[in-house]
Length: 414
Image (tube, rainbow, N blue to C red; front, side, top):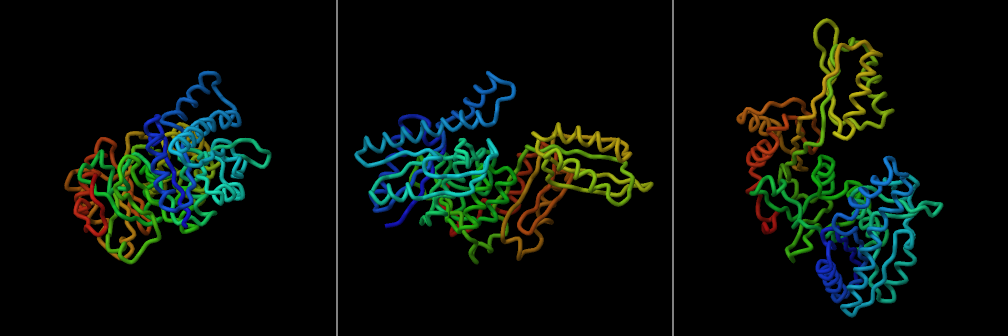
């Protein structure tokens, strides 16, 4: 008898009908002879509504109290799912993160899991009970309730699957799996039957809202297979797993575009050693996360440095850049928030050349100008004007013939 961890996202438990459907899925897995641990998110838009409520009563709510408030969303869901399973005639019990011993650090609203005690879950599973755990939350060493940040229920589910050595972790969501591109923007995007941990980490870091990247890091470290699938159909989803030899035959697995970044340029920097260190030290002090960086030397021993940051950090980054300009005697600071980052990802890139050429040629043919480029072993990203984002995504998807990936690597499109 295997152990399966199943996670249901907010859309999967949004109303009574969907809660019953989720309960029926859980029971089906249980009837097949498995022990089942279920992790549940807050229903629908509950978390956003609770955040809005907090800001209605305070301009600067305490992060401790914010965690106390936000954790109630999952508590509602777990109780309702347990009741739905009872109504189907099966034993179930719900627990908060703290009740099952999910211990985190004390960084409220973005806590990290430090330890999980599985004693209580194991006792209930051994009695034949289905265990339902609130995602997204834990407690610190002083029993303060903490939350794990956006997408934290994924991390809860994968962490439980890892520590309990589950056969796999099923992530039920409102999409049928992981696609070669966002199917809402590229209708001919195909669904992948499998993708490696490294590829999905790159896609997650570049704005593909499939899984929280911390949950993938957990899965990779403990080798937990994750099956991303739809709550609303029985179609096979996408398996996230260790890379296999056959996966390397596909050069590019996915293309993604994000408009969540801004570009800042400091011009006319005196070209001497240590200037870049000063710039990025000051940004790091302000907790600004920098993504892409380009430095080019211009005439008269002056250099320009351009970097990208997330839009939410742009205001702070711009303020810091203006301050740095005065300190180091640079000429001016420019910013541009109308940019998009287009990326191609694939573990097959390691053994194939010509990927950059194909990507850049496709953009050149469409007269789409490239402003910045960054690469890793399995990724190429470039910054383009935001107005070209969707067109560039479709053009590059077509250039790599991702709508024609061999059927062995695909499952039927929904």
